[in-house]
Image (cartoon, rainbow, N blue to C red; front, side, top):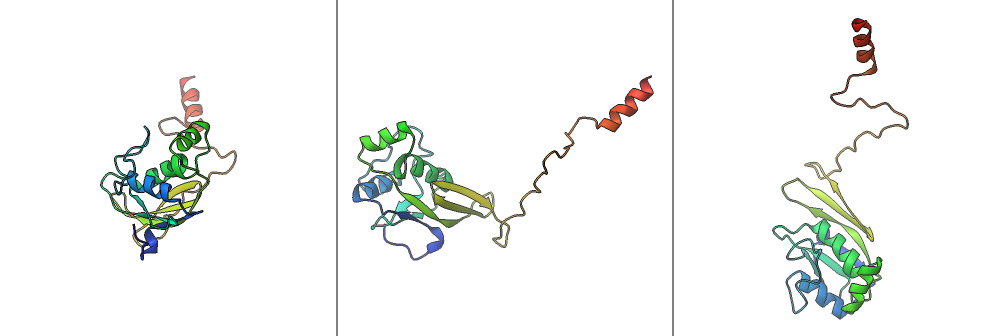
Length: 167
């Protein structure tokens, strides 16, 4: 839980985590004396996110079967910044104050190719990257009112031709 040198695997946390929050987040990662399981709904056995000793950042560590995006969403929703009534009650029950923001970009590898995890506030999203670590071209956005051909369905022209030959 030392402060990392490699900033490509780090998201910052503001305000910094308290000592009890560091213990809970580290415990979910399988490190230290904190709880290994807080409540149902955890994305897996161990979190790939380890807090630094000062609580100012979370470091992504490769874990088999641990989805960094899913875990970070869980940590934000349930531990770091719960907003929903049930999540707030669970966090307060174990003494977590909440109210944190996460910010940063983390380069992820894996079977699906390189991806970029982007965390901003309470939002976590993942963007696929190409082999040069550039974002893949976004699919062309449809225009309002654009007619889209449905696969397996005849076009209007084909239907008209069929109707005229049937008569």
